[in-house]
Image 1 (cartoon, rainbow, N blue to C red):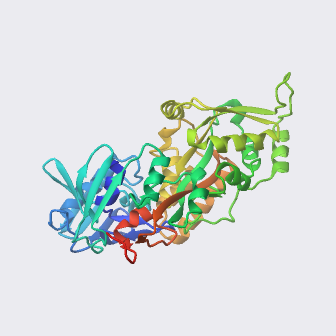
Image 2: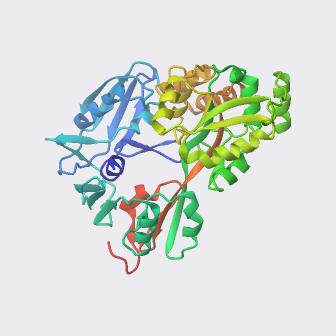
Length: 447
């Protein structure tokens, strides 16, 4: 509920476009010094908090400095100093091309007693464990919302939520699972909006385990997987095959650079060259390689499809299904051969550094030693222009292919279902939930 409330009532300094480029929001513009250590930020004039007061640089400076404590920030902020009411000067400890991307995690708010006040399109009226109620903010800087009130309610299961949608008791079903989507899309009174999720499904490896230590064996595992078929079977066709960790829509991504393709014959050659020959153990399946994979529960169907594919090459992938708490603990401590999980991979490039640099703040999420991508990620962090970014991204893609820390499998889809009482702007890039402030009642509809 906290995430939903924040989405409705807060606004970020910048946002990430579908292509990974930062888009001005509360920040109107930004520029850096030649050495990249000093940034000049300009706020959009006239932005109001929900209490009617104007947003100033004095409100934003401590929010930017809070990046020091964020595990989701790459840039090391030394200070953020207001220059005037609408301008700030920020000093970094070292050059970081990710700084503006880091600002996409900073939203505007201020304290008023025990309350925190935002600048977003809606104001919170009430909140319980199962319900949220909002009213529109008439002075929202991007324009007053057409909808006067929004209420969010949780349901015990999809069946109850779907029934409420059919009875016009609700207008948006926030999350439509894969099993129900085909049925829902056939209902003429409902419109379904889909969006590629910026989370890549990965088969992550622990190279400290003897059977996965060789980069050649990890390469073979990546080549043994038919990702298109995996999307069809594991995601019921609701997604896109991944060829790398980099978000496929990012402006700097080059799909022609070191894509990992389905090549079972080459995979067998690599396994043979690694000395892995098929062995028959009693009545068990013939196996040349055995490893265990911890599976995140929502990906159980994909795990079974993956297991079937690898078995065709006499690779015995044994599935474990620990509870979420145990899975996270074992990932952090390195108590695994492999894991099947989702990782943030876009739209921005900073996720590559956060996860795959040996000093990345999120590296602690899974206890493995991996530094093959450090050089390329250092170049990406220090990049001064688009050409340098593209070159570094290409080098990063190549590093992942030559010494893979994981097999990157697929990008899943988000599906939302809504009634036709509203005209909902869709551009294929923006989540319809985040565009509620732009919804308009359809002819004859009520707000």
